[in-house]
Image 1 (cartoon, rainbow, N blue to C red):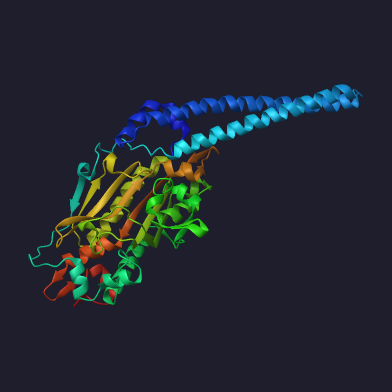
Image 2 (cartoon, rainbow, N blue to C red; image 1 turned 60 degrees about the horizontal axis):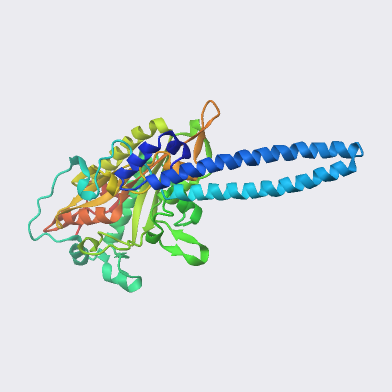
Length: 423
């Protein structure tokens, strides 16, 4: 969440930047500032009463030693009254602080200056394009037909076992899926990322820590009996490793990667874009997460973008990078770059990665800080990115690499699959 200091330093700029995300911030910002004034007044009152109580406690002891029992008893009665007043002040202070935090939790992160204005995905900016477009005949099949033809993915069986959006990978389809996961993990390891194997369920505090709560609770699968959530991405458990942690500056940067299954309800997603692997309730993904000093985070963001681009180039897929406009960004992000690959048989671009810098927004929720040489604690910057999400990568690989003889496996995956072609 935003820090109170960010808002107090320049409230008009905060309101202006929130408007880029389509968020009306004047009301919440004004309320937070009003509550801060109340908090400071209550804190002063509370501190004053505490000092008075300390002083009177000392005087009671002196009066008792002097044998002035009546005066001591009067002082004790005054102390009792002061304690009751202090408790009332402390309760009001706690209520004001809670109200302020609850409002701060509803305010999205500020988009950085590089974020273009716009309301929808149509306003995103294509930053870079690469890769060779495949030359497929008009008879080319979409991946759901290829999956059936070569017995790679059984969508109907997934519906039988669980429901729509839970496919079953079979034979060479399962092996290709596993090959992609291992390839992505190996490349992350080569780039200096430490592999983590996280839990697939998280508690409420973890959801709040990375900003899925209270913004996206309707999109997460919830286990009511245990008050736990299935993870929508490995970002959540991995970043929460550093919740309530004060790092030594020498530990930075921290670079973690993790493979996990991801679970998303995708409520409200309908139409042709959900067919096949395009939009699932359960899917696999390799995530990269970084904890950085503020002055290093944007260089780290570029490194992460280069890493994802390298994966797509190795797979031989046509790709482009989108710089998301304010209206298409997530609640928690300061800037996001989406990577999309071209699906030749569908004739459309498919998102396969989002790489984001959250600056201090998540770190402030997490209380993730580092101690500098001057011993002062500083909020870290957190970043993460998909490297990569598998379903649409699989879809594009099947569609773009189809030939009359079968589906050609990219060379970088063959040592993992053990076969060059699917036929």
